[in-house]
Length: 419
Image: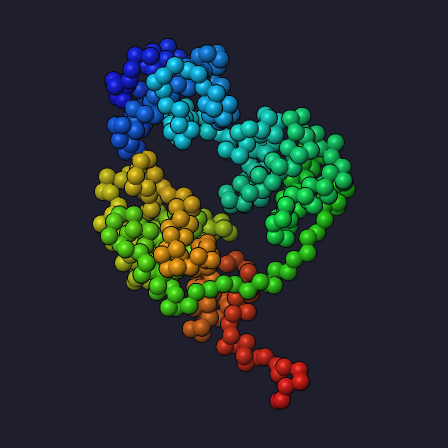
């Protein structure tokens, strides 16, 4: 059996005599297929053997193995583990090994932030996030954010009791809204209020709950949509940012190609990681953007520097054996897996640090810079909206405040100054 030959007799016996025995061979094959080295495979298998011994000791069937069981093992058992050596007890290794086990068992149905919550809260939040995604059409990141807020709200009011909206009161709604931000910006409180209204409407639609008074009790948070001024980078700073990528390793070529998509096209991080090879039309020089925030598909021109960066990455860095159709994939185990938005943010943040910009963060700074560059070149707000794939021109209106050339033409003299 791949990966099990070097095991010592005791861990191997734990695994062979446990409910995980039928999945051991497939687990090893999965690790090898995703590019893990032999030493890592052996270490992860020993972690699974430790977990299998714990399952046998507590008489837990494989059908019950899910994120909550894994969380219980990692958080409760490992700190007080008295199992006989030699077994790995590193929290990092054990967590990583068991996450791969859940993939093999196909048991990853509950998000990580719900692992420690009771079944009633888990089921309620999962139903709410499915409603947000299927009925409201919200993006995955928005569903995740609102799911966490509803989880905190239900946990604060019901703790481990059954969820019963009839027990909610106006005082409980106001108490949560006023205490939830905890020193955060007003925008956080605003999102919490919007989420509570959305959740209560969900209860009204799905369960016919009488929640009109509760919805009316959710306070409004003062905020002005156009009050902020978008931060941007100058042309020289953009050039410095792009020049900070070495472009000598596979990862740096990939990160540079992603950075060009952000800085040249103004794409969001989620749009970058969702680019497929089939979305690139090299003959016509276009790129199709699918599943954007507005759930629409767009075809945009592909500038030559951006296309050259993507072509260099595909020819020189992307493995020819990669079966995934995603453009940007992992180069290390688990290899050939599409990247997440977190890797895009890490690459951009690392470039900011190399440039010495300790106060800069986020990928939207590059998106704002694209809008600024277009406005300075004489483009209209409608043209900026088309490039940034805004569904409404009102979303683009915030960039009017950084169009200094046109603002100077309509600015009135300062009161008291000479005309």
